[in-house]
Length: 426
Ligand code: MG
Image 1 (tube, rainbow, N blue to C red):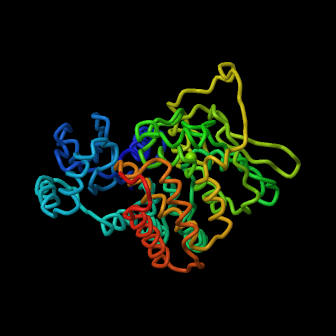
Image 2 (cartoon, protein in one colour):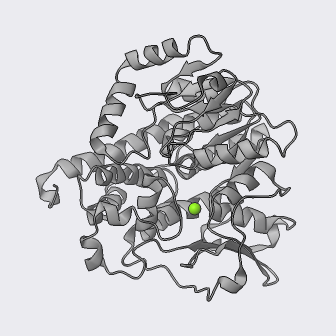
Image 3 (spheres, rainbow, N blue to C red):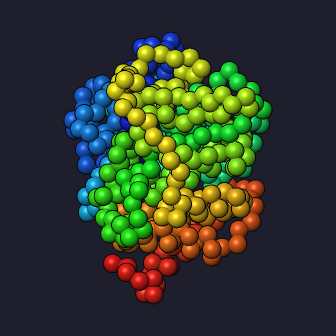
């Protein structure tokens, strides 16, 4: 599940290819709807037994499915705000679009679902074994919880779920005996580096960071960063939200929390290492001093594929790494003074409880405002910090408490931006 632009399309391509490689691999896919023409450029007859996707590149591909479910709307990957608004308006607030879609698909074996109920229905779909959660943001919590309760393994590309509700997700997964398989490249690297070793022999985790497009820049420089600058990541091609998060280093902060939950280590066992070449995707240091890392070209197809084949490996279309072409690999410490968001993430993780959720909610809201060109780049940093300073958070036991804290953080951010004294609000 997930919108385009967040890795799901890559996932589906991998699955489609692997379908031939892995015996008995069946796929429940999702059709994303852009409110315009869902199958205008597809072979409709193929849709009868297959599910395709419409995403930002114009070449939808058909793929084998176990059963067919459609889910929308498609919003990511659309850079034009006016078009985006129109689509969201038409798709989300206008039930007629669903009726139209249902009508157009009525002679096919495709069920059209929408909204959170639709996500949950897909998540607990009876015949699937694994749920790929590629949805953006903490909206992924409910479907993930539903899937775990239904006994599905989770291939997790949605780190916000673990960041905000790790305290619920991990014990539940343990109770239900399901695996949470990392898709995030760093966590996949750690997962790969852990194979064949015992948990108690881990000394620390070395979480690598490219440093984003503004590595080495000053606070003064960041003042003048524009949306289009922040959307250019030097090494990875990703969705808009995560690309902004990578530029602010919030992404790395969330990944620290994600690693803590996934690998059950203490915070001080996780070290962020800036490694601009993105060749070493992360590493594990063991008690005997051995450091085991996973290296490769920066291509999401590898971690995605590994989440589906682990511990086995199959041929991948990704470009192979040529060490002789790597002139040098460099490493440095993250600049926590300039990139205060990373410091704030670590602080939130230390405080625990609902703090990571508050931070994440504030960040999601602030990133959305920045993407809409409503706030300046550094205001995003300020909003995250202010949220952390503003709230006194407690522990949590239920998803409702998590959602409530998230809503509070978002509301706080919106109210701060609404206040004139906040400064340079556009
Ligand atoms: Mg990552």
